Length: 158
Image (cartoon, rainbow, N blue to C red; front, side):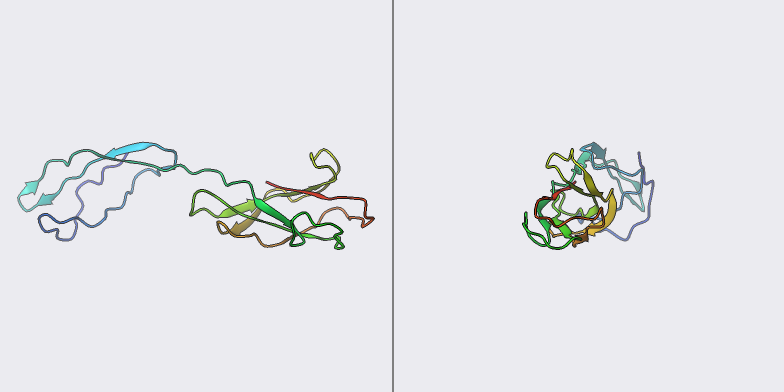
């Protein structure tokens, strides 16, 4: 996969740790693969033997959790919404602490199983949401809604 070859480094006194040497081989993926490695040093008299074999295992990158606490008009499951262009948001959460939300999709339908009339589907839309943070409000831009008091809009975020 990768062999750094002989690379000059700053002086390392006997018994002390070297500076970090960055991997520069084929891109590694977060897929639980275990890799093995070893190191050796040179001085003015020649090359040492190899270190004992060491290993490291790449972490896994998991999909984000389903959005928590979906909001419409800043509330959870609001009733008597009077705005025909409501705003939607939710909290992004991922067990991979450094990950951020990169895309969102919002679906608005007349049926809670999403087999009714599709009022709006944003498709996959680019965004940037920090882990554990509520997304910005996304404004409804779908089919005109009627405020007859009878229709209940159902929202699904994926």
